[in-house]
Image (cartoon, rainbow, N blue to C red; front, side, top):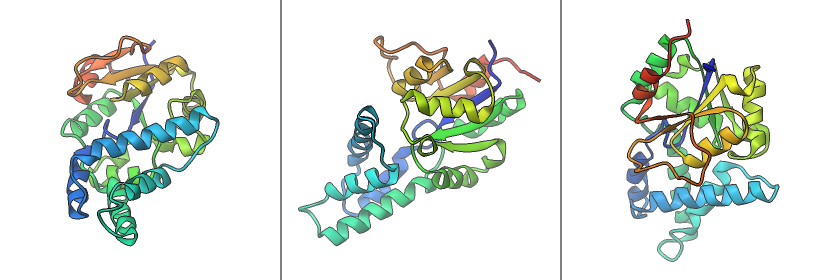
Length: 224
């Protein structure tokens, strides 16, 4: 069934997280810490979700970052560094394919929604800086569902907000765990490959695989 609404993940799917490297080095933290830091944030968020708890993305990311420079700088300096980096998430650039891909998807007639485990305000700032905010019907955060993706209730929240059945909603994400979660919840899901070598065989396969958003738009029919 052709989807009517396309729900786009934000962190790394739309936003280029490499932009945080400069902010990290400005605070005295090694640039190659970005990947380890972000992975640790997701790990702790997922653990809380699996255990039935929840925590704000900003709280986890800030505290995780504050722990990393301890022993290298003072606690006050660590807190300031964490604020600088976390506040910078909304000031990142989008990947080069994103503007053209978004325009093509809108031209095809799809309703666009964004969904993140982070904050609505950061994503709003990201999209406005890229000149893309007007193309999105609304912005969602798993915080509103009181659980992180890939919990089923996070995707059910998306379906309720779009007022459609799950099979009419297509999640688009660069993270296989997000694709797997959406598929298990009954949604369609497109995996954006970017530079990843292959989709994990042990996860629920995606509905579509695309190199980037432009490639995704070329695979989807117009629904005018």
